[in-house]
Length: 73
Image (cartoon, rainbow, N blue to C red; front, side):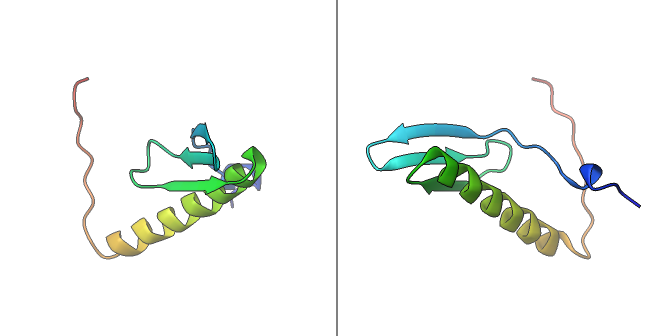
């Protein structure tokens, strides 16, 4: 059984301040964006966006074969 600490993953996010608040996205999850009036709001909102994104990917790949490919940088 996984410990509480092992159940969590960390994702880097990029935050941009705008005149409307904070825009935030997770570069490793294409299309995973959010926003907030404050930095704290944006950080909380991106957590929700990441969770929903991961649920969507899990649903889309259920019952399919998933492969990994290696690409030279």
